[in-house]
Image 1 (cartoon, rainbow, N blue to C red):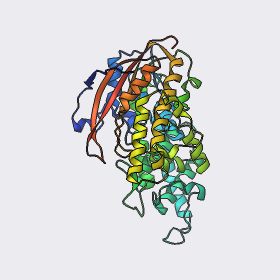
Image 2: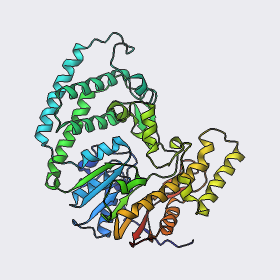
Image 3: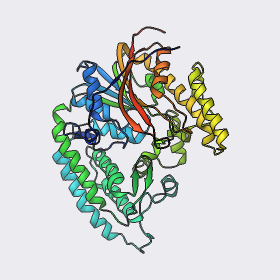
Image 4: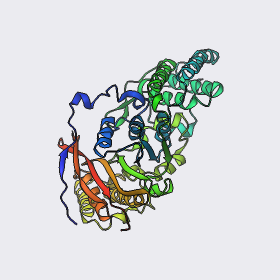
Length: 435
């Protein structure tokens, strides 16, 4: 099967514009978001291009921390998200609920902030090496990167959680927990992002309560601005993107705007591991393993023996050619680690999983539905080029979708090859009917 994608640039923006949020972007987006999230303006561009109105429903089947949903709600458009990871699913739900009283939220947070130092003074600290400080259970601590949090900031954060539990008000608790997640990653921990998550700048201490309260204030300030749109429906389902029909009504979606994971070695559960563990979304290796099984197989760290998504890629020669090339290069280079041995397999699992997603999606799309998938080329598997957008377009066309074209979103420099890789928006249309 061959076809030619038309290619045109998406709306051009300067590097400064790409790297900062404008005033219209800021409300709700900065409450908590992935470092690699796509920008809100891209969602607005395609809402406008597709002519979406308030009578239609937009789906983001890989909604992450809710960029698409927040933008839709701000524009008065109904939206629904699918997310398989409980931490970003929680974040998306909070970020799209603007009904809380901002004054009440602030007043409650300030009461908590006053109570935490009193609690800390009553807790003895026996030594400077951390003995006597509050700590995570051993099974939970094993999930974290070494030194991702210093003992004293962790102690303070756990005491803050205790006080939130004791003084908690149900209507404020989700916002206060999301504020803590944001503060943990940006101000309290030793984590560093760029592009992989790592540890840098070990902090003996950190202003835990002050950082958390600052995040709550930001949320309250934004809610005040957003409340005129609080009645616009937005919902988020905790579900596998390959099983969207289990979560949505048939023929209920008019538009899809999303950015699925790319086939590379980024373990997206590591990006949110710290806050997921401290807030209790993941408590041990078994829960982490079960979580990963519900995710698209986009990296070797969530590949399992019984995975069968590669069967969905059986009819695509180009995918198998790439997989063979990766394996041949691995052998030639003498790469023998367990993860390296999986590079060729995860390539087939990824595209097979996306085929499953596209097939499942057909049941919930209305005839004429328009779709935009933000994806990027990859070369992280031994520098073998994977043209993600082109392959996904071929898969979608084979399943009955019309390929409208592809927009160049931006280019980025590949770390390993120093070559420019394309990030594109693949545009599709679902004509309806059986295929």
